[in-house]
Image (cartoon, helix red, strand yellow):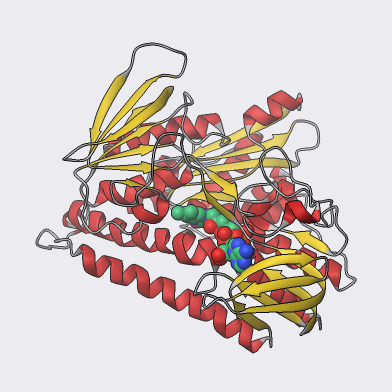
Length: 466
Ligand SMILES: Cc1cc2nc3c(=O)[nH]c(=O)nc-3n(C[C@H](O)[C@H](O)[C@H](O)COP(=O)(O)OP(=O)(O)OC[C@H]3O[C@@H](n4cnc5c(N)ncnc54)[C@H](O)[C@@H]3O)c2cc1C
């Protein structure tokens, strides 16, 4: 069989790349080693985590907030088995959707493990051991990432779990210890806290959400602490020992000092993800990687071997589904002779907790480090009419604009629906907007988005409702 393009992996990077390539007339095939398409994101990442975040949020809202709204309910009870069914239905709906889209676009989908036998040749080994070779002009590697493990801590997906196991627990752990205060740890910690767990987060650094704006992270930590999260920051985990009743986790100050321990029913290891290239045969082909195991690519997603490209979590950049998707589109367009491009300065990131945290562009720390003079406009949700009436007043919008040109350089939001609100900033930044452009755009009342407008007004110290 002979193709213009074979894409390895059908996560958000791979399947989107294949669809765009097919739209542009390339004869395209995909190879996927899971039984279902959609990759980490749809099977064990974005989609199932958001299903559990939604369900657990509804559970907590019903229990804690309905009475104040005048809605009388008997305290809700938890049917975790059904909640997991709800999650799985969402996953199935999405993975089947990808299968449908591949068929609709006449993309040949092979289920099996791919190895690049040579440039222009992809060998597919099926579960039954069958083998076939696909001839192709181009190969896009979109094999994604895998869980980062900690030395000496063995993940069994029962008592010591990765995100995959944490999405599948069949009982609510009384004590959950999360190692790592990044997005995945805080999202999954939120799910189980809402369902009844005591959650302690142990983090090596002295702050949560490394990489996010420091002020936002500090505020977010305060809000999470009020919700019941416990934090052990600046703490290095040294050992996890399974006991009859769970796990004893040993840790010590990152800066050195005496050891402490924590008892847990379940420990979630959420210290990041590493690029996944196992079994592809890259070393034999001489495909270069960086010192973190990421495939090295040029500005056109090409590796150092002609005809082999790579996108998504397996290359440098934020490990996010939408970044992988945009790279998939860009590389397909490049292969079809168009000018595919990704603007890495404007990739939003969202933490889907309650409240949500969302950001795009530069943080204050980054601007300071780069010596860029900037103005800050900030507006709290306590002063936003819609947030007040909804009782979702936690958080604020912060806009960072260039001190000379007023161009928006970064936007950081903590608050209800921050993950949707951030897209106003994304579009504005993509069009090179100034804070004044946002401030002069009419915003419907009463909406949470008015806080974005007010933050833009605040850049020049002329917010109205503050
Ligand atoms: C718990 C969790 C929650 C997340 N939540 C979010 C979120 O809310 N928003 C967000 O943007 N990102 C989120 N992410 C990150 C997101 O899932 C990844 O950034 C995204 O899936 C990367 O897409 P990808 O296409 O590069 O790779 P993947 O989605 O990892 O897909 C790679 C695919 O390649 C297949 N593969 C690997 N090797 C081979 C081979 N040799 N042959 C054939 N197939 C192969 C794999 O089976 C896999 O299906 C989350 C991740 C996790 C773990």
